[in-house]
Length: 249
Image (cartoon, rainbow, N blue to C red; front, side, top):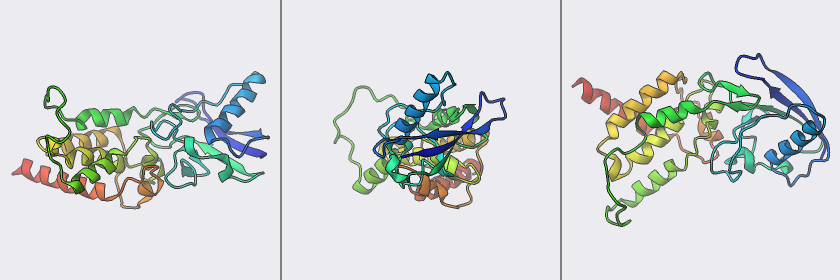
């Protein structure tokens, strides 16, 4: 396959940035998208040029590091797929591919396609945990969890924090991510003591980070590689209203 890439290049967060065009001939359709970028970078290094900076780690769709906007779509056009699991057979010979970083005020660009997603870490640190000391690990069946609650908690826990939801949302909202972290613990017995305190702290931190508001567009769910559901946002909003009402009472 012979491809043309239009890649966002930006030296640092203070640089204006621009699109740069690269030709990528001889790309195998069996390569992953990141492997294709590896080949492009090898060729740039051979020519003495600066390679394209992009995030990656596990390359198995687990860590959430590989976030790219590909032809205007977070992680590319293949549903429920991370960038590292997107293969070049999803494109056609002669295609032009536009590659950008996540675009959000809360995610400043560090370099090229790499953004600072530490805002997510600070949201989790604000309340996305259980603080009660539990001692040594207990037997897995010592605390019974209803099947529906266990399944919903596991579905929410599938969130890998890649931030595709933010990149896809016209408002750059982080509601899907935050609601997944809130729902994960909120469905479990161990998460009940801090349930309402948790939702208030995490939403307050989300707002402090500068993320936009949710207007129920639904792009976040459509772009999520782990198919986290919008119903988590509804559940989080209910908990937040209850927590706010209780605080006022």
